[in-house]
Length: 216
Ligand SMILES: CC(C)(COP(=O)(O)OP(=O)(O)OC[C@H]1O[C@@H](n2cnc3c(N)ncnc32)[C@H](O)[C@@H]1OP(=O)(O)O)[C@@H](O)C(=O)NCCC(=O)NCCS
Image 1 (tube, protein in one colour):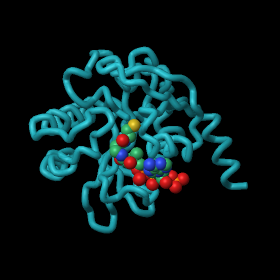
Image 2: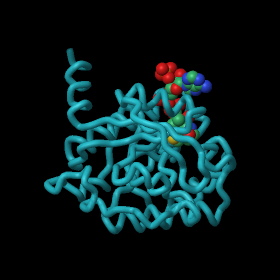
Image 3: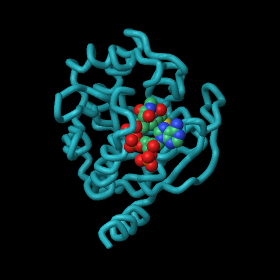
Image 4: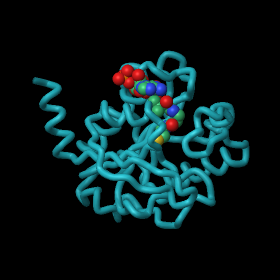
């Protein structure tokens, strides 16, 4: 859900550096977090300054930020969001990837890792989150991108466990977590709004057994 990185009121200041997180092994190739990933239909790539105008258009859609904002983002909020992503990327912290439609090069969302500092009761942990523009929903793209991110996270970034955080009524997001093989762990609350949240988890070993089952 990547809640904690959205707006100032949601920040708790708990954000962890990549190498300080106990769910990232020390031998991991930290720098590859910002290198790109390509799937059949998506290019997952680092954030750039040029993403600003396409993001303003995408983030203004209420559906895109409905969970947890219940509205679209304003231009200044989008600017703040992008500035934060660029800064985190430059500092080598956990940051997600921009998702581009490979066929058109259009920026359609973002997928990847972060630290959910809006949910301090489950920290420390690494979150996997996904957001795709409404024009692209229902085509399996969030699942496709998140699968590639998990593969990168568990094989090259040194992750040992990830969580996904969904509001219960966000059934599409819950379904993505389930399709990725994540298991329901517990309920929690957004510390800013008190919204109830469902926490899903996946360890590296669970992910590896899922990979074996998919091959069999
Ligand atoms: C959640 C989100 C990323 C899903 O993206 P997507 O590319 O459509 O996801 P996928 O197509 O990979 O999978 C969606 C699954 O949810 C199911 N689904 C979608 N809406 C549903 C609904 N109202 N009821 C039941 N299932 C639903 C789809 O059928 C699909 O499952 P299936 O493959 O078993 O049929 C997208 O809706 C989104 O970006 N929403 C706004 C941002 C957001 O809420 N992000 C998550 C914050 S926790």
